[in-house]
Image (cartoon, rainbow, N blue to C red; front, top):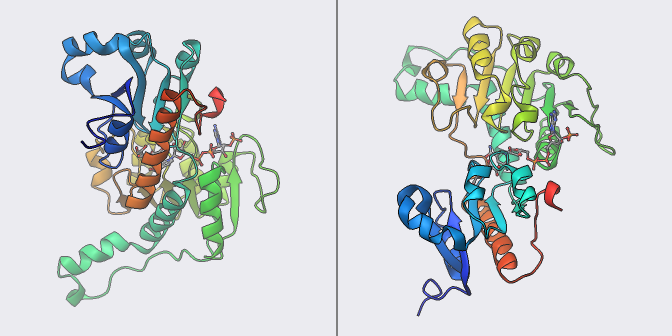
Length: 323
Ligand code: NAP
Ligand code: 8YV
């Protein structure tokens, strides 16, 4: 009999609210009884099992609000396979004695690598260059010249685990780094700039890597984009909500901003047609952590947090509010 058929903790019932990664699903099914998006697929069946649900498996993009928690009186844990948990109502979870866990650190390298890839793609027109050859334009002459990345000034908005990994990589490109956060980070060799507009004004490339949610909503607004300027490049690997997408499109269309390279969007998976039409924009579909090894490590940690809860042990990586 496979582990799939005999979960270690069959009475620990988990509602998966996300489309489960194939790397996560077998780990969860080996541990507990899993109901895959049953609340959406079969509301009547869900009503029957809801009183027994003790865990929720979610992704960094999942939305779990008080309304769903109210329907799950036995809920003990929300395990997010992702470091960002802005879609989870943590206050509502805490009020119900529910712990929220996430998967920090294991994805730092991948997200930082993607940020560098987007910085390079945005400044050196990598996507447009690829298209130039495929469209048969090379024989008609060379492409327009691009912007140099090495030695240009990098502003990092958010200087946590991933921001620091981005800054370290940028040093190999001889890029002077400065950053903006609410509190300066002691011990870092980069200047802290208290004003985000000032940071944008002194940057050639501005990388956004804060959490999402209400506290950072539209942090990158028209004023910040204007300060970054017509030669500036905005890179967003944080959350779509952090950037005022309408202001971004207007700045790009008017030439007030030079370019953008974006992994995250306001209404994923929908990307506005106006944004998709702009040649000075590079777009990726929220792939910051999307490698086999990193998603495997995230799945392992997300499953381990559920396993620990089911076994009555301490979870490994609770979010800061739940520690
Ligand atoms: P982290 O270690 O908690 O760092 C977050 C940083 O953001 C801290 O330096 C924090 O400093 C700063 N910050 C928070 N609120 C801010 C505000 N209002 N203004 C300015 N700075 C603010 O988090 P992390 O592990 O680096 O992850 C960061 C985020 O990246 C995640 O929450 C997630 O949204 C995103 N992410 C995206 C992908 C992807 O696939 N694209 C993958 C992983 C993560 P202060 O508290 O001092 O302000
Ligand atoms: C993933 C992310 O998109 O970790 C995060 O916060 O945004 C990404 O790693 C996702 O959460 C994978 O489940």
